[in-house]
Image 1 (cartoon, rainbow, N blue to C red):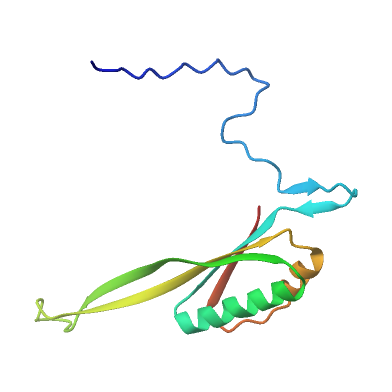
Image 2 (cartoon, helix red, strand yellow; image 1 turned 90 degrees about the vertical axis):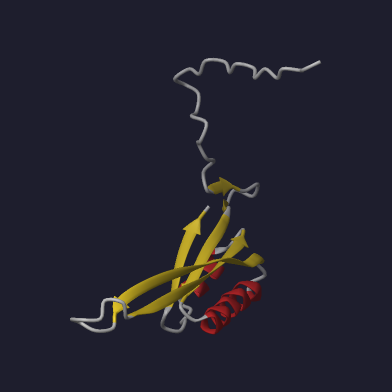
Length: 137
């Protein structure tokens, strides 16, 4: 005997309800009356993985110095950009060279950061070639 699964219909949405993809605000009110931040999501990318790992360690040490909870580093997939060029400018079409650039990426989450952590991370000097994206969530 075959069983048919039936999906229940959703109730019609009114204009006062939030859309389904709506998020909660990133800044919440703490019990003591102060403001509490959700988390800092830091994406770090670089061409060299050793420089990247040293930068991640420096960021983690800075966050842990101020008693922050750190999740990560989570290694993200390495982006590879490949370029193919002709070796000669005129005759040999079949003779080509291939080059590639690898972009290594890591992800860090700092939970409930206080203003001291944010200030110390902005004053941090990292090596050249390291790109950082910081989001408040």
